[in-house]
Amino acid sequence: MPNNLISLCMIVKDEEQWLPQCLDSVQAAVDEIIIVDTGSSDRSVAIAKSYGAMVVHLAWSDDFAAARNAGLARASGDWILFLDADEALDQAAQEQIRSWTAVSGCDGLFLNIHNYTGSGEQGATVNPVLRLFRNAPEHRFEGRIHEQIAAAICRRNPEAAFHLTDMIIHHYGYQTAVVEHKDKVNRNLRLLEQAVKEEPEQPFHHYNLGVEYLRVGEAEQALKTFGVAKAGIDPTITSYAHLLCKYEIRCLEHLNRWQEALEHIDAALELFPDYTDLIHHRGVCEDALGHVEKAEFWLREAVRVGAPPPMYHTEEGLGTYQTWYTLGRLLEGKADLEGAVDAYVEAVRAKSSLLPPLYRIFRIMRVSGQEQQIPQLIKERFALESEEAIYKVLGVMEQSRCYEAAVEWLTELTSSGDSIEKRERLSMAEALLQIQRGKWKAARLKLEPIQRKKGLYAGQASRWLDRLHWAQGRPIAGNDGLCNWLYHHSRPDRLEGEGHGKDEESNTPVTKGDSANAGYEGWQAFGLLMEGCVQSGQWGEFHALIQMGRQQLATGVSSGGETHQEQAEEPFVGAANTAAGTSWLVRGLLSAADEQLRDWSEGVNGQRQRCWPLVQRLRLELPGPDGFGS
Image 1 (tube, rainbow, N blue to C red):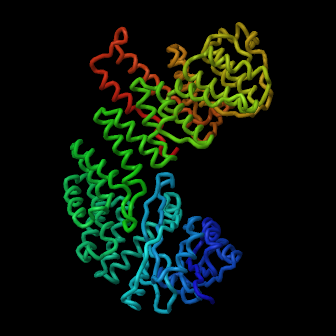
Image 2 (image 1 turned 180 degrees about the horizontal axis):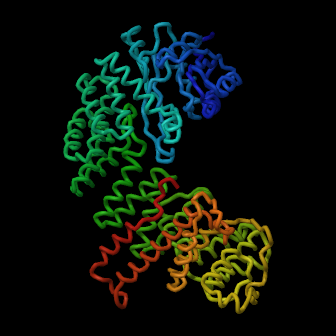
Image 3 (image 1 turned 90 degrees about the horizontal axis):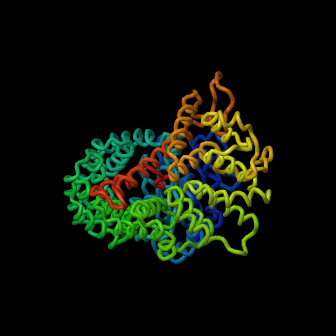
């Protein structure tokens, strides 16, 4: 083959879920694909062949290096790129990889692996790993698990040179669902414990074993294992020494041994003074020990230093958005709410898709009486470049109960050039916000024109008008299941005495089967009514809703939405979903508690009670949406 051709080498077993994504990502980046299959029973082999791959069948022998080397033996390219099926080459890397190999005089190139953990939405750890190297017969992997190639390259050429690139590989295999499905941790523990028995003097095995112990929460065992690894390395020349130090610190934090963790951090900073992760963790430890001023100093130092140099393994956001968010929480704790908002703003500016700091910003501004300033803060501090981003922020305002700010901002989104459908959609959204504010009249003024025009949202508007009739003690049209249920359980005399008569303000029946924009139905609609009753001070209606909700949840409906045999059909759509019902009832109770605390703290004639700062802190810490996993 001509020079600068690239061979992709992989090992797979039952990877039909991930393999297409991986192979799609390398189509323009490699010249041949060699896949070693170690016994797939799914469609992995067929998928590989559909991409033109050479498939090598090999019996699995609990040895990753042996499987890797079986693929290398078939590779004919000048360079070897190796990936796992649950990885994908970043789009930019697909375009850069040939230019890197064409001009590089190195023996190997490091790429940055972005490992996504948890649900995949919490960010990633970033780790530079040797994944692209020159093809040579002497270049063969070593190690039963966490196999390595660098030692073989250096043996062949003691003057071997390696270069760190900015190319990225996305790794999805350590998300919680994937790890549990494949039982990766138990597999890794078994192979590493076997490797330690075979090569007890090899510190890399002990290090990797410690990582797995830490992953399953066995921090004490992990700490001991890391100690064995540390005793066997020279930290000034060992590539993973910085990470070994950080993992020891994480173990001590997990064990609440904060002072020991600080001592380890100080020692590690002597070796790695520019490793931001250590600086961030020093702030965390100082905070845990109650040293608030020191904690603030070290967190600010971490953001001053910024993200660590690329040779370090790091957690995405340390030195940037994660550290700003941690600093914000610290400043909240010391009642510096203005400083906290500034820190949260910087977190969002560092990562625009981040939601948790937005929730904190909006909650702080609402609780501190600055809700009306939210739209101006957004204009001045954030750059919202898409309609999707605008609506996402609007949704966070609503969930943070900043209804007044949301209404103000929503009106600014409406323009004369909008389509009829968009205008109705925005009017419907404003009506729902007004309902949550307890502004029944303002909501009706938005809903009635939507109902009269009989457009896409007419059915939804009609249902909500009936619900407002219930909240205001008026007769209903009788076309909304939720509203009928509310009347039957709270005002049976009114329902029976006046029937389902349509008054002059609600005379358009809901079209049977209408499903246009069925948002805010069922328990969610129930929850919005609860919030409106709290905001309007209709405590009698609020208590009635709480009582009815509790009774419905006690009727024996399963959380999966399946009714017991003795139960009749659902009184309203979604009534069987007890998880949703419980969630909205709790939200309503928390809203009521927050409103009562607000009223109480203001005291007489608007004069704040002396305990106002404590009440404010309580309100800030009430459970509620926080943006994690949203």
